[in-house]
Image 1 (cartoon, helix red, strand yellow):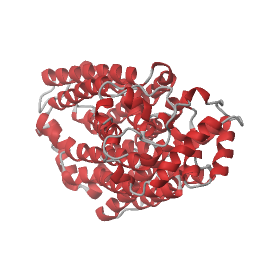
Image 2: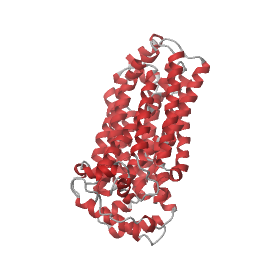
Image 3: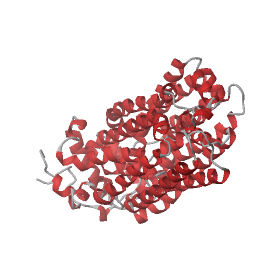
Image 4: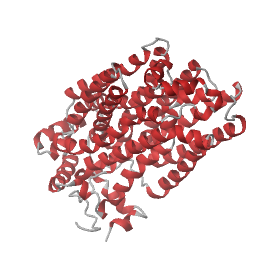
Length: 500
């Protein structure tokens, strides 16, 4: 197996045609409960931008930003540029990055469920610290605990969904994670809209309500079964088989069970999955584990969602109007994810990624042109152009919601063979959070330096990622999760890399 040999796993025979079973209520409920963990990630993305535009919060922890905001007329693009404020938002993502790598051995050794529960408890502690914060240290410590919760949750939940779902519906069920994320963002935007009117402690309520999705994830995790793949990997063959029969609604699971047993035999022979994933035979999986989450963030979506209230205030919307506008983008994102659920297992992953990329490029360029021509450093957009910018940003969000939003998580979670699955997902989450951190930390400074060019910066990256998908990502629709290795050896490019 050394070098470039393509005997990637012990699954040496394609048995997809022999897979039996149907979608059972049991698997639907389990996937919905597990996916609620995505709402933690979404709630935090949505809540951060709203809270950091609230005057009471800024006066308490970032008085320099508050004073800067009062002199907004000096430079619209630079009024929120403060590294301390960016550190509040982005400290969570560095903590999540570290936690996602720590979660990999936990998920492998103790099961997906253990990481889900651990992530929920950590998030509960973080939300309590943030809601009761009396100084910046306490505030950032709370953010770090939230980061640990997100690191564990994001590492385990997409794997859980991919392993529980039947092959023909894996894309749609896996996207429940993104649905929960987008609903979390939308809920956070609505919460911010309400709490900004509660003076002077509304921001505490916004941050403290993160405990609600955390409680759902923790309690849900306690009652969830683990996945058959994880049980079999840990030597619980009989228990794994019984669970597989239950979630597939049939006793005829011999082919799928045999694939899992074969995969687990190789998985258990590998003691250092992080070292193994660097081997040449896993090169396509490693490339996707790095590039898919990197590209997802470089669409610029997090910048728009984090800083939507700040962005819209910078364009001249009032406080209320900016939060309403960002609530609108959150609602659009949640709705558009359902387009992807309905089409991903029919049209496939590649069609959605390429079409979504084309629409996002168009929208970013249009926004850049409007802001470049009509919005200077010390002037406001007219009402008509402001509405047009919001509409185009919503069209951008719709495209992201059916393409890179859900598929940035779905594709990596379904391509790894069992022996490197936890390590691969750990790398995916770590890379996602690393780039989320970089963009969160740099966006306000980039906005200040690039001005309207920030949208062209992201449009350039979307062009690159769309070409990358077209050339290098094979279609994963309808391929059993334990038989993905056969897909790479049929691809025009990867078959040359992976075969001696």
